[in-house]
Length: 521
Image 1: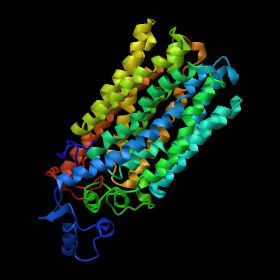
Image 2: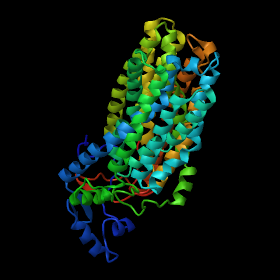
Image 3: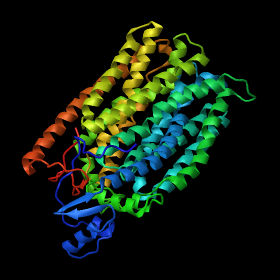
Image 4: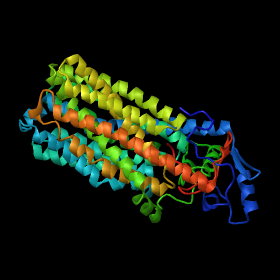
């Protein structure tokens, strides 16, 4: 999965070595001596050397490191998020598999809507937990969150009332808020800006794949005859494995490259050297340490208008992102398909969406044009919802489902690396993600309320609302990109153009308003 070694268009790397930083003293093993002596110690790192005021790493060694990180970290995180998304969205499949009848949910759909809404209320309340990935060792924090939501997801199968299910959904949201929103932040400890988007895309593509898998799994479970209610079996089958996966998280998730047991000493040295060019990365190299938060950076993130533009984009896309998986089985049923067929037909659009996520995050990383990618995807999603809102033919509406899924999931997944790419420290990245989710996760509260049962079978209100918000996301992407272009021109005028680093060269650490920083468009 490692990316090619050449620099991408969005790379902010510079070409001159900065004075010895606290990171170099503390994390690379540089003693608190003269600049010359410190540079000599950097020169002696395996797989890295210092030459004419520049720090270089061996390209082959760096590629090996990235490949090892990819094959160790991404599969584990992908699997955990797949089950996370599965456990939050399977309530839509459970609804048409008999849960509504057994729990005596109201015919007007309000009881079911509240089951969706309460999850996101908890998600918002516990958004601050994204910063805990920097406070608590990541392997411990992830294991606790995974075990927690697995236990609650399993207990959903035992509920006998709407109130009991409401409690479970709230607790499920609390534990999942401690995991998913913080993982992109955690990945930024290991990967450079030009590498991060694709890795976040791979991780978050588990969302549409989980929804695809949910439909297929629900089809298999609800199509059989067992001694307990099909919807209860669905919760058990999808909840119990998470408690086992908590142990996997504990033993397999590394806290940082320098503490990862699967890396050789040369790998760790290369990771330390890479840290000189990564903006404020605690694990690959800055003065920021695990368990240490720079409060001034949190303040800087809170007053940065760019963080609120991306947060509003996240809010707008989340209206559709949250509602499509949980209402799609019902929408397909209203198209005339049986409950069993609806479970199966909900899977293919999400598989296509999964492929588009991987493709678009890779293209955005390589071209440095994430804003344009988001603009195109959001308009595709908007067109899909317009088809669903304006047509009655089953084939046309089902095609609209494909466009909606292909637009919504890749859009929201490309927004996340855009936030992380444009922050100047670990703490600011964590704060940016927290702001993004705090504002953005209010979108699902609206998204889960716009498909009332009284609007069946076409749900025009919900479709038009989702269409409008997807188009609004595209407009916001244009505004933010224009602002970033202006910011880069201002930095060029102030500091001069940034000289591109050569292959294998490690650039000096940079900060948001420094001479070596340029925003990713």
